[in-house]
Length: 130
Image (cartoon, rainbow, N blue to C red; front, side, top):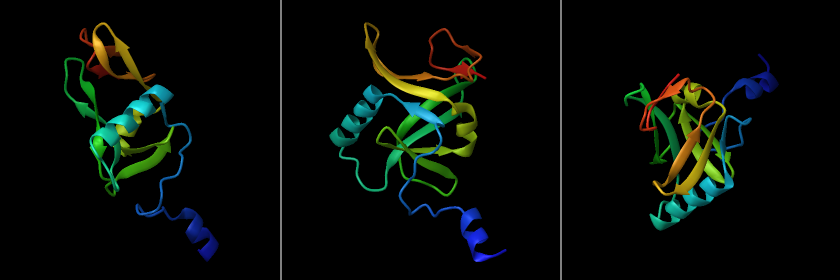
């Protein structure tokens, strides 16, 4: 393998700045604004980014987890709508094509996941099945 091939096939170290990935996950402008407001209000600085995660549990089988975290070796890092995002490869399988929005209504406010991979949701809307 020559040097040009090696550099083209090696993965970038985590310390490099995240680069945009090809439309894996979308974050609406309103959701991005809210994430950045929360980041500022909680004085979150440094290497921390928004972690998107799918965890087992809930009445339908899976639920979403969203919080600020530091990157690990198994994370995929990218920037969406000026928000640095971390997703582990297992969660990414379930999140491909998902749009994250922020909604406010009579029943409260929060982040809403519009996930094209979901086959069904529970009655309360907090978990899903694929």
